[in-house]
Length: 186
Image 1: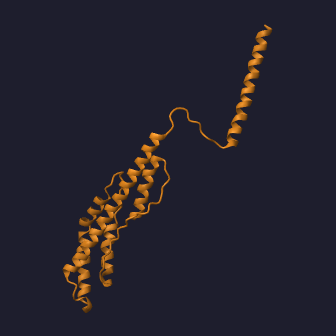
Image 2 (image 1 turned 90 degrees about the vertical axis):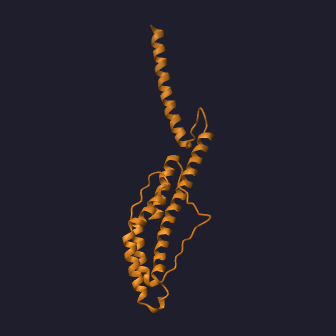
Image 3 (image 1 turned 120 degrees about the horizontal axis):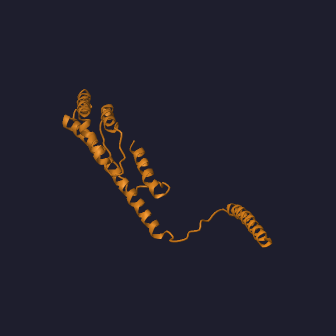
């Protein structure tokens, strides 16, 4: 979902500048990792589904972090239910006896922080694309030719236009000559 929003934002920004979209490779990728017992994965997925289930609005400004941040309080009930279910599932297994309710709460808080960080990353990508698009527009405006600009066209197009123009010019010249001949005879 986030990559789709990033793609849409990129396409919208590049439309105004007249550039083709270019894939950007992140030179300093940030990786978010969270380790937790596999037994609580369904509860983690329920909470993540709540966080990511919202439609993002692309408004032409970098506000994805704010949108992601607003998801955390909106999904508070889902987080509480998932934490309780995860803690109960862990309590039933003796190999997870060292996981307490605080550990489970920390796992879910970390998921919320990762969600917000993803929104901040989208904001950084968006502002980078906006800056580069503006720089490209400024460069174009500064370097574009002033005055008469001849468009380079395919030779067949030029020949067809020359032939059509020559025929029209010949017809106009013939009409002019016939008017001159009629005027001279009078």
